Image 1 (cartoon, one colour):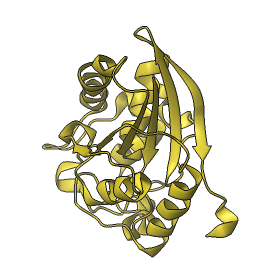
Image 2: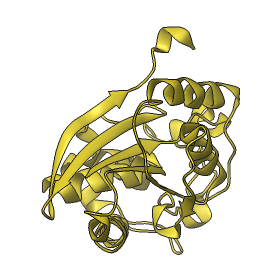
Image 3: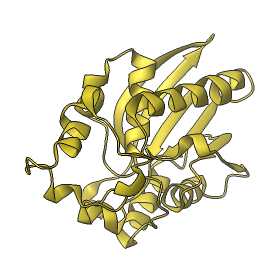
Image 4: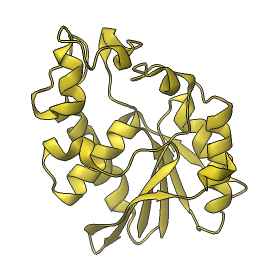
Length: 208
């Protein structure tokens, strides 16, 4: 059984470097184009099960990637992006070099010591959410489905990478994965999961 974890297409908030978290920010025109090109590049992959974050940017990406496959898209709250609480919407691009904003510097540069604001989500909680999804939603499907698509968000997908490869938390932002509509591919055989591709882009950026 192969599992393709795909990040959603671009949003205006990606461009503006604003923390989207669990806010329902839509794809922009480029994000839709990225998903359409990725869909063309993935058209021959026989997805027979599709999961998606319910957030619009991820769900619309899943719809575009599905094409005309007669497969239901299953929305799952476990696939939402990390929750920044009251910091949702903050422009992190302006804070990474400001000594008054150590919290956001740790989010990217020292994840082991990142502490969210009240109402926000910690990395241990997010890693646990990813672990629950994989163990309770994906592993039971081995033998029933051959190829699964999971449409989600950058930070959460990086947590899947850590959980399924055994990497430590300080490796979270050192993965090559990350571009909009890029994919991480895993293969599960007899309950054992291995990563077979860490960063696959199914379209040429020259076509954007």
